[in-house]
Length: 314
Ligand code: GLU
Image 1: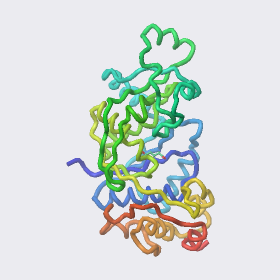
Image 2: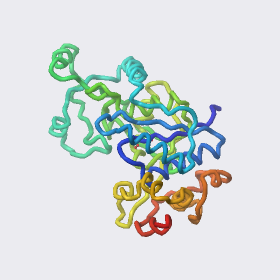
Image 3: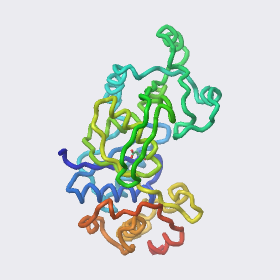
Image 4: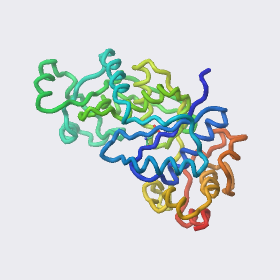
C-alpha cells in the first residue's frame, strides 16, 4: 500500500474564504487521521486571474488555522515540461487532436446550448476529422488547442462522500481540452498529472468538482496512472440557498485573521458545518483522533451571515 497522501490545491485568484477553509480542514483531517501527509499545490495556470500576492496570503491563512503541509508546495506554472511530456504520452494513444474552434463557433455549431459540464456545450467534434494538411494550413492563422477524445461508455466510481457516480464522458462532455490554444495545460490535465506525480492517494474537494472527476479518471486511465480515492464535500449554502463561497467576500480568512478572530473559533465553525462537533472553538489537531469521513455530514450545510458573525464573535 502506498503511503497516504492528501492535498489542498487552491487557485490563487482571490482570498481564501470559509468554504475553501472547510475543504482544506477536512482534507487535512482525513490525511492526518490516516497517519498520512498533506501537501499544498498552487494551481496558478490561469495567469490572467492568478496573483502571487494571493499565494502568500493563503499560506498565511493555512498556517494561522493550524493546517500544516508537508514539503514544498508544487506550483503549476513552473511545470510546463511535465505537462508537455504527459501530452506526448496522450498523443501516442491516438486520442488527441488539434482544435481550432473558438467558443463562439462551438456555441453556433451545437443544438443543445448547455452540456453536462462546466466546459459549456458538448463539443460536437468539429475538428476531429481534419487531415494533417488541413491542420498544417490552419495552424498558420490560429494556434490550435488540443482535445482528448475519451473512449465511449460510462465511467463509474464510488465517491467516499457523494456515493456512486457515473458519467459517459464522450456522450455528455465530448472531447475536452487538455492544452489551451495559448499553450497552457488545462486544469483537467494538470490536476491528473500533478496528483499522480505527488503520489496523492486521497483527493478531498468541493462537490462542484464531482462532475470533473470522470474526465480526470479518463486521463488517469489513458496515461496509465493510478487514480486516487475521491471524496467530494457538499457545499456550504447561505440562507438564500446559494453557494456561500460566491457571496461572502466579507468572510475572507485574511480579513478574519487581521481582525483578531481566534483561529479556533473558525475551525469550530467549520467542524460544526461538517457535522463533526457542536461548534465549540477547537484546534485542528484535537479533531484528528476519531476522525473519519463516515462522520462527515453528506448534505449541504446551511448558514447565514448572522450565524457566522455570532460564531466568530464579530
Ligand atoms: N484549483 C481548484 C480550485 O481551486 C481545485 C482543484 C482540485 O482540488 O482538484 O477550485
